[in-house]
Length: 360
Image (cartoon, rainbow, N blue to C red; front, side, top):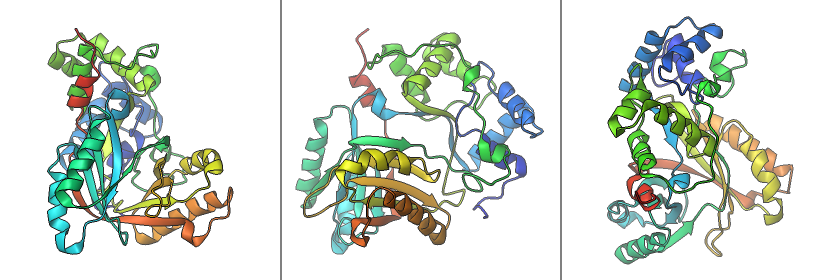
């Protein structure tokens, strides 16, 4: 398979090797390069840093750094579906997007529910207020689909698919998390003021320098060892999902974004969820509520492919996995492909982190 960008073998290796597990040490590119050399990739720390910088500048990466788990930082987020008639589509989309609480918004292929957006708020009660405002402005009903259970969120995109069969670094990836400081996770959900500052500093990525953690420490007025220990602890606690390069999947050719939805019998969801989540090409997998008479589906599995044919093969694999647990009929599922991005600002952490920060 080809990508939409031309990548050298070493660039390909970097993208595939470090979509997680990047070292949390003061000079992380040195052990990262050592780990790549151990896997047969001839590269040193300065070359690795330069490749990551170049990939970032070319748009192959969305960013380098941590993926902050907004759910664990505070506040709430929910997925919402609604109908926008053709003759008012642009008007309604603009009204929805004008709300700062709306982060992502996509048009998806569905005969009725064609607009799908994410609402992110500092206080959970605010969700219903935002939806009421949108309904009043647009005259269209909204359908709230909050996450009831998460089975997987791991959007990793490899240059030649999740596995290319040769067992090398490109397929397996590298995990250097054990090189970080020895930390003990806590059960503290609220953030300290310093932790709040750290979250906001790293939410859009790390500095692309030889010493990114030291630069973060300087930016927020903290000791570098505290930054290392806190980031490593956040990684273990789930406040950070992973640390590494974050590819732009469109640049890598993953243009077929298929949201498959399923009407799974409630009693088998606990078995179906982990099995579907274990498929390497499923990036997101959730249980969500139904809406009687409008939306019969309670299970979502997001797949990505580089062609319609590849996406259809992957959807069939999801169906095969489902069929191991229950008799899946044609009317029990659907696949909603995105046709255009209507808004993509990312989930902003400031208000959510502020609302979940302990007083000084």
